[in-house]
Image 1 (cartoon, one colour):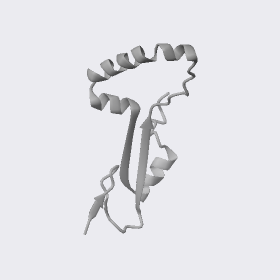
Image 2 (cartoon, helix red, strand yellow; image 1 turned 120 degrees about the horizontal axis):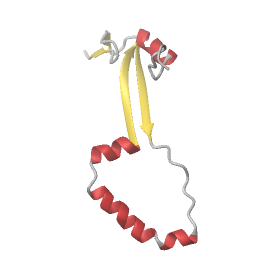
Image 3 (tube, helix red, strand yellow; image 1 turned 45 degrees about the vertical axis):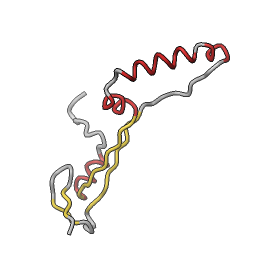
Image 4 (tube, helix red, strand yellow; image 1 turned 120 degrees about the vertical axis):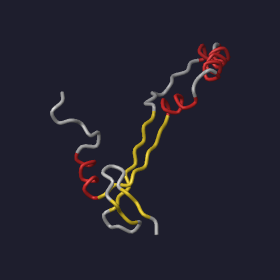
Length: 95
């Protein structure tokens, strides 16, 4: 039997628990569409080489963190309610 614990509070749950929920979070770069003109294509090869050089020296984990990350959490019913009411877990007293 597979046993699950709520990733938020630690409450024990089972695989078929009716009070077990899955919460997913995706974080990715909010890139705008790029407008490319004919003049821009002339410098594209040198710009591409520059980007490749930067990537050669970059930390793969940092690149991934800046482009896309996804998370999956098992949560109990009580924590589901808290997540829905306050998804970013903001402190109600802080400004």
